[in-house]
Image 1: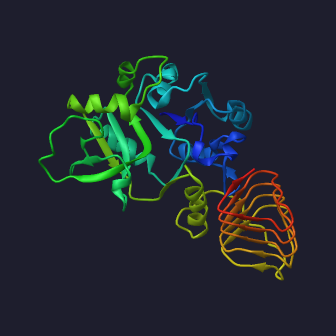
Image 2: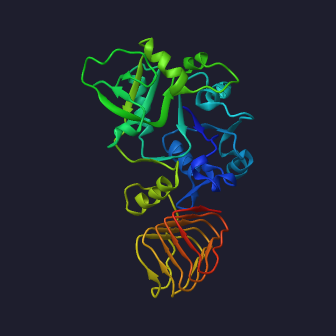
Image 3: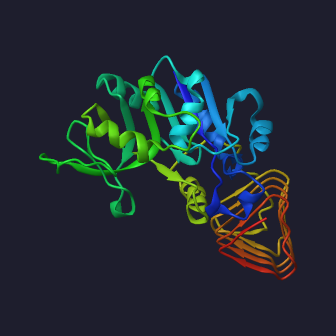
Amino acid sequence: MKAMILAAGFGKRLQPITNKIPKPLFPVMNQPILGHTLQMLQLHGFSKIIANVHHLPSAITDHFGTRVQYSVEKEILGTAGGIKKAEDFLKGEPFLVINGDILTSIDLTEAVRFHKSRNALITLVVREDPNPEKYPAIEIDGGGRIVRFPKTNLPDPTSNTKRVMFTGAQIIDPSVLDRIPPDIFYGTTEDVYPKILEESLPVYGYLHKGYWNDIGNREDYLKAHWDILDGQHSIERPPSETLSTDLQITQPIYIGKNCQISSKAKVGPYVVLGDNCVVEDYAEVKNSVCWNNSQVSEKGKVSGSVLGFDYKTEPGQTIDDQLVC
């Protein structure tokens, strides 16, 4: 089965780092989020994978090379427009589309089985959320059929329904491609799916009950790391380095290769250090992610923040709740 990863966005809520590094290359436990997505797809048997790229595309294509095919968008086309541009790759059989900025344990094999068993035109992977009012209203009935969707003119459901949110993963029948105009900005949930639902065509929601998080902003990006450190989600990663026992470390933390931490510094809790990071005398780091080759200088304090590649604080500098690069 084929899959498409949506990786063309600007990542505006993660600026200024995304001005230099596209969001698909943001490291999660020292590996790009797009790399985790590729691992998940390959685990579930997706061997033919394409990603659409637009913002800083060469950074992505240079990093992943031939591990994935690419659809380069000179002008950003939206979700449906991006899918349409990749039509030659996707046509012929149902295919998966997944956002490139989510970390999740979705059972894609079971989601595909569900899609086929319902003879669905579209299956959205959905989840319940404790704060459903934060998201556009989607309702499914007891069999998983979507009976209400944003921007649809449908009567109120007559049966008991469940309000859910869209996870960013979906399985699409190739006939849907005919409904998308070429070479213009066009959305799936905004422009394509409401019309299909109003025609009473089979649109379903596969309910995912496991882990899900995106990295759309600083808080959620950090939370993804804390969830992994707390064991709420497991990913493939190198083991944390073991350093001297005389260090002032408060678990949980993760330490990459070749890091230098002063015995006079305080690190943790909830800290992820990439490779070759330096934490100098009397520096303090907590609730933060430091990318490869970053440095917290003497008496520096970093909390609730992300330090980009090669970033070096000034001596005594305090960085709270920031993205810096």
